[in-house]
Amino acid sequence: MIGNFRLAHKFGTILSKRIYENVFFDRFNSVYKGFYLVVGEQQLNEMIQNNWPIRFLKIPSTERFGSQDVIALEFYDPSTITPDQRKLIYMLNSSIQNGRYQTVEE
View 1 (tube, rainbow, N blue to C red):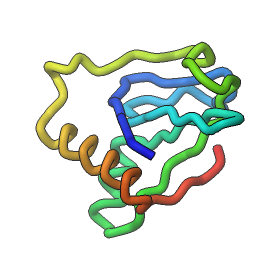
View 2: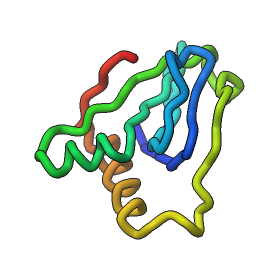
View 3: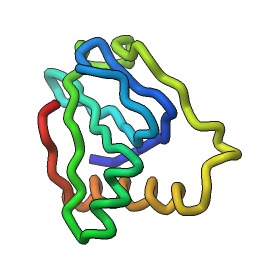
View 4: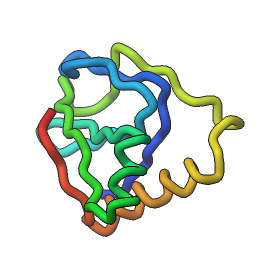
């Protein structure tokens, strides 16, 4: 898999149990269904500081392809993303590519 994480002020889907704030998220598709991987910026920083493995919330999607199931999405303005946040995005994308992460069902 190839990660393409983005940073959002708010993120939620039809199947989300809540609206998440200040999170990195990406959508992945398999042959039969899709899902989102989500991790909060604060939680990610704690994982890194404590040398814990990266653990994502895995939120199912209502469709195979597309993003019609997103009900709340407010991206960060790209000009306001800090160099540290860019490093986190790079690290998340690398963790997906290398398979070094864990998931927890929402």
